[in-house]
Every structure is written in structure tokens, then in C-alpha cells.
Image (tube, rainbow, N blue to C red; front, side, top):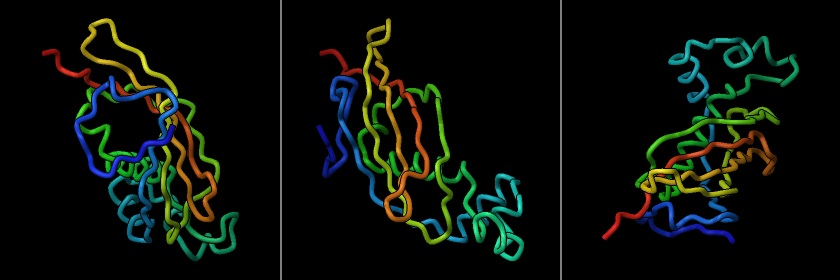
Length: 157
């Protein structure tokens, strides 16, 4: 089952089901993104910041930080509009893989699949098991992994 709501609404644990897929809009990664991320992360590794030395290297130019891709992915997921209102706690990032590099000029988009749901012992929250896939140039998978989220249950009347 694929779900892409047209407008954000109030979603709760009970509104999610295994097999739901949410697709995000795209976002183009810019050279300014790479420079800004390098600045605030203090990760100025030449593979991300030096066009001259990387031109002849493995990737043929600078590539985005892996964590920049993950950060953009979480921002794209937020814009879907179904997780923000009910989010209680990010529970972990598991099995994260970096399949291909992201370069300035690449437009990335994500798919989030609900792979499982379970109610917590309090009965006031539930856990969404979510598989994230980030796609880049030519719709190729660039990053993937699991990011579970604790969410609110619908308030009792």
C-alpha cells in the first residue's frame, strides 16, 4: 500500500500500518550545501572540499558527506507531514549503508517504508519500524537503512 497524503494531518500510531510507503519530494544538493556542512561539522576532508585534488581521484570531484545525505533525508521525511505531529523520540539508526556518492547537482528523494509497528508497554506510544532509502542521480540508491521512531497514540476520549 502506497500512501502520499496531499496535506499534512494529525497522524497517530494507529494510522500507520506495515507496508505503507511514503515518497518525498526531491531536493537538489548544491556546492553551498557541501561547504556549509563542512563548516559546521568541522569535517573539511579534501574529498568533500577540494575540487582540484579530487578531480583526478576515485570520484572525479568532491562528494557530499555521508551525514549530509542522512540529514537531508530526515528533512525530506519531515516534509511528508505524517511523522512530525506524533513524533516522541528517534530510537536509533541501524544498518545504515552508503551505496553510492552524492555530488553537488544531484537531486535526491526518499522512500520511507513502514516495516513493522508495535505498541509500547505504556499503551500511550507505539514504535514505527521504518526502512529509509535515499535515491540520487538516475534514481540510483545512494543510502539506506532503518530508522525507528516512537510516536504518540491517538488520545483516548
